Length: 368
Image (cartoon, rainbow, N blue to C red; front, top):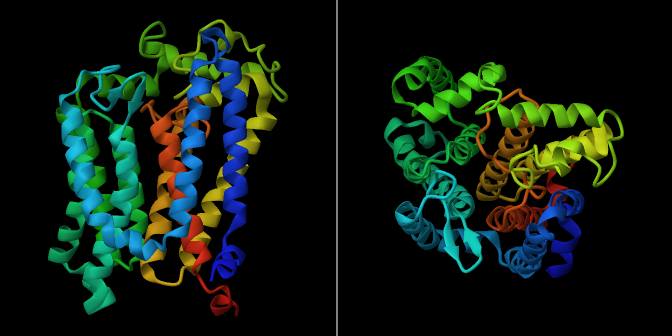
């Protein structure tokens, strides 16, 4: 049984993950030299903690994990409520601080919300695949997503909330939701966007959108970070200025350079070749995640894998997009590359789930 699992595992996913982690550690080495590599050391520590967790997640059948997920999902909701009563950090109540470490419940919520949502869809479709398109059952399943998303928005953390929405859309698409819901959703979004902008979004969120459209509106304030990011990436040209030699990075113009703008550090010091390579690795990783969803042995595995693909897709597009000025800044980290213990552990658990699902499929079934 174990040999079959190892044989079926999509090892290219693990290889892509290792490459991204290695690139991230190199970038953190450069970005943290002025702080005695404090964040780099913490990232390595989180990586060491993550390895046994990944092995455990791979070894336990994902169907078993799904069965205990309702309990874990409930605990995550409690943590998402509890974190709202903590002291704000950078304007958001998103972290529990324990000693010198910060834990972000919204990151771990990605794991259990995706599995819980897949589990609920499977239960609904026991009476037929088209049951997910019945309004009452669809709304019931969406409550699994809506509750944590609203709690995360309350922190506020709009970027993470959007990641949930992208994952949900892809999971519902794979679940066979009727096209009328897709068209209705697009119409609702088109109507809701101007309403959100003019009447609902807080001032700081509206400012981010305004600055995204024209960073020069406030070049020394809200537009500062994106301007410095674009300058850094542009200065890197083809092969970069050299590790530890980036002007924007080493002189402190990029902020926060270890999290939101780590891609800018790489672009400045290692150049277009390195950044293009990162994009290619992400595309391969996401493509392989979709392939795992397509070849999973059951719908549960398929839905979980597609939700994971959605999480990685959103984070890659949003983080890289905001660093080059194509998308608004939302504070979304670059998976495996940006500094962040909760983010690294969460993303590695998601990778472990993909390996888990791929290892338990029957490849021969899908050969034409």
